[in-house]
Image (cartoon, rainbow, N blue to C red):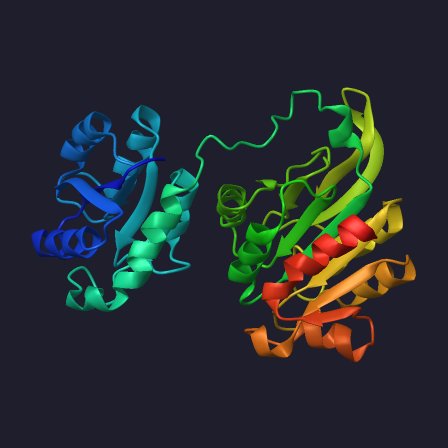
Length: 349
């Protein structure tokens, strides 16, 4: 993208429109090309003005912001940042917005009219710029296409497990990984139902690794990542399940909770250690409890490597601590250095 980043603002409050325009216009790389408080007007103007990024309020006077988002993605797919008091992290509307195609969200700190928004100027500008770099056309390989030979040649598997504080850390790690790594990735993040698909999409947008929420029967491909869906344990099996293609496949089940959770890091890691014939790298990140301990043990028995996040950079030093206490960690690192270590093991063994 060349020139300035063009932004269109859809905001119910005229005062908030002015504040957001003022914040964005203060950056030389951003240009506000239009604004409105009406959803119907936004649906008319956005395809005409062709902005790079749209900020969208949930609470609009004519039609609901989520309806605007859904219709907009059909007529003019664009990078959308939800901007509302109703988009606090973890809220149901946020999850729905991300599922409908929004790239990210910015919460108004003090409700619908947040005069203190100026205090978050740098964060807002930074997020708009980051979202503008997303490639909406990035897509994972459709299930009905026959993969290339090199995509089937899976010789190294990286299993990443996390709980509380994990989404931000996992996203950071995946962002920093090179796109040419000859490895596949299985990601197990304890999350509420409905959020893992959006989480997988965000990883795909921000990283160089093709990523999707895992589905039953997915063929595991090289240079690709799979996020365990909420409510299901994710294991792998070796077979020729689809189009008579021999390889490793994802299998999902609703067997009892393990460590009080489903999906469980232990279940995925242990499955890989039992079935996978190549090299295994386990990564245990921030989180409460000890999920990942037995999985790390099984990986070590297979001769694999185990990386854990250090205490100083963890939101909760529970899962990594259990692995460290059991003397199963090959590396104890701040999360900023974990990507480099993964690459080192993948490239050098």
